[in-house]
Structures are given as C-alpha cells and as structure tokens.
Length: 217
Image (cartoon, rainbow, N blue to C red; front, side, top):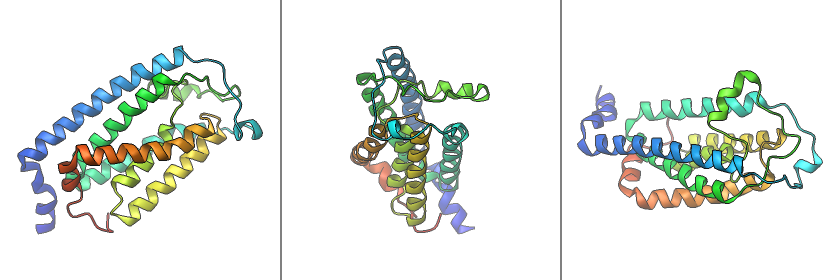
C-alpha cells in the first residue's frame, strides 16, 4: 500500500501537475512543428543520391515493422510512465525537444527518398501523417528509442531494451530503404546531444524522473 502511495501520491504535487501540463503542451507544439517541417521538406525534396548500403542491398518489405514498431514503442513507454507517473514530465519534454531539433534538421536537408523505396500499404496510409517521405535526416525511428535508452539509463534492463530497439529499427529502415545510412548513423550522435540539452534545460524534471529509478521496471 505504501509503495502505491509513494508512486501515485505525486499527482497531488503542484509542481508535478504544472510540469506535466507543460510537457503535454510542448509535445503537442512539437508535433505541429514536425508536421509543417516534414511537409515542407517533402515538397522541396531534390533528387535521390547513392548510398554505400542502400545501393548494394535489395529493398525488403518491412512495412509492418516500420509502421507498427513505433506504435508499440510508444504504448510501452506510456505504460512505463503510467506505472511511475514521476517519469512523465521529463520524458514528454525530452521528446518535444527531440522533435523540434529534428524539425530544424529536416527543413535544412531536402534529399529525395531512395528511388526503389517501397510505398506504405493502403492500410497504413494513416502513418503518412507522422512521416512524410522527405523528412529523412535524421532517422526518428532510430533516434527516439535511443533517446528513451538515455532517459531510462539508470534502469539497466530498460536501457538495454531501448538500445536493442534502436538498433532493430535502424536495420528495418535500411532494409526498407526508408532512410539513407547517414540518417541512421547520425541519429545516435545527434540524439545524445539532444538528451544532454534536455538534461540541462529540464534539470528539475530529470531529478523527479530519477526518483525510485532502479534496475526494476
């Protein structure tokens, strides 16, 4: 009983409530920015370029993993935050910063998709609201699970799981020719920098996040 009280009693904390609302607002704003950045980049996309990996492997139909992988990832992350609500503010704000910074990169880089890239199946057209075809640099499929690995770094089980997911998604987007190899490789380095920014800017939320954080879920 005491464990449950310690876990959910934080919802009565005024700072937590304010920070949670702020995090939700920042994430929604980031999603709007991401939408317009992706739309602009896709409309402005130039010709595709050769790639040391994509030019030497055939394209594979990994559409299901490409679409549903991120969905299951965020359902899982949301479940982790619901289990320990103190995780919500920092997780939301870190993701918001990630999306805003990625949007800046996307608007600066207009390389067209690799020519033999498979289009999304008709049943997955809804996913085009989140990925646009020209928003390539850097890979969000790779960067977001790696960001969660950094966010949950003090939990060795979750850290390992999220790193494995990041590597898996990196392979998936390359096999489907959805991203260039530079998009995947750069995602790890840029995401680390984004995390360090979030850690500094939202220092109090990071301290709140690390409360009760152990090797357990």
